[in-house]
Picture 1 (cartoon, rainbow, N blue to C red):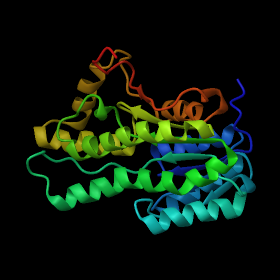
Picture 2 (picture 1 turned 135 degrees about the vertical axis):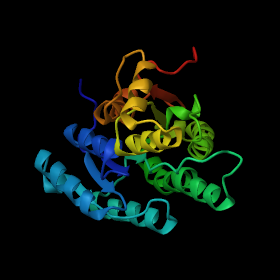
Picture 3 (picture 1 turned 90 degrees about the vertical axis):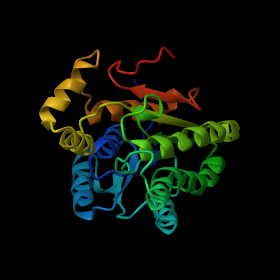
Length: 264
């Protein structure tokens, strides 16, 4: 299936590892021109070389930066447009905040979580939409978490800040739909990334169990009887960013091996 992504320009946040990296590679394989960005420059440069080998050096632009900072968001968008003269796709993806008990989280942690997971998506969307409106084509995909539908113990910062993105995305999708711009949320369940392993490790320490035992316990609750892979999440995001997904907007789509307990 031709996804219609050849020559499209995509900005992928948090693309030095995990699902962000897998998404950048998946988009490049479909012929998109990919701008990758994250705070960890050495890892980002490795991804840049990997994508260059898949396509060419002309198909990838690495811009180190913290996409929770407004000035750096503006720089990434400006540099993308200066290089490729268009912006078609944005994947909003930043690492999640640390765990904590709802009654104990301090104001500073709340403010940081909202800045990182909510305001970053708002600000990036605001920067790219004028270009997308001129082109009358655009795709915004927010990489969030299945926890917005089924909360996970102590992930109150992640759940709350990302739920704010869900509300924003729904309203934004209605506003920009006449310009052929779609806005969707991708909700990963248990995907085997460094962050997921770290969360399991912290929960295991708190419960006095081994990390492997906790992962085995979690796997048993998934109907598919396994954890997901970053590449599987990347396939979903790449489809949502494609021409083939032109009538899907304002949606939050889970990829969790059937783990979500709700019917709808």
